Image 1 (cartoon, rainbow, N blue to C red):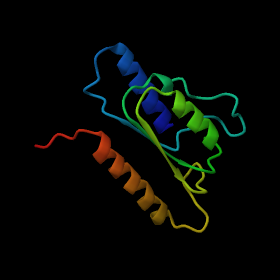
Image 2: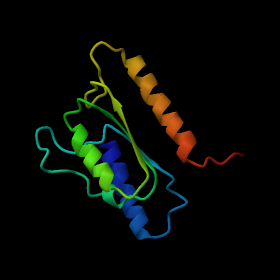
Image 3: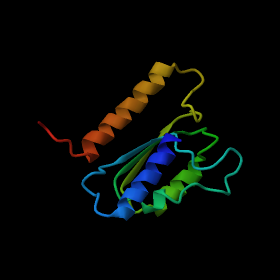
Length: 124
């Protein structure tokens, strides 16, 4: 529930007022867009209100985030967004024939690259 909860918090904070400087982005790892086999009930309401940059990293075989559905929701979002698909990854990002370390390295490369491109980090 981490990605979904974070999206909800961002939506609430943005509705409460001027938190644009505080929230610089959202990273959603395995966003649970729907329950398994219940694609008709999307959990997209918070995503549609977010305005900060969003990175989605999801498995292409995630039973809780069908690829076409996430791409459709993303196309409706007003926020800058990027989706990276882990080929044949499930909801836990496991991929047959690949080690967990290998998959995590791919995820880390995407996350750090996205952070460099989208987030203004304060240098002290």
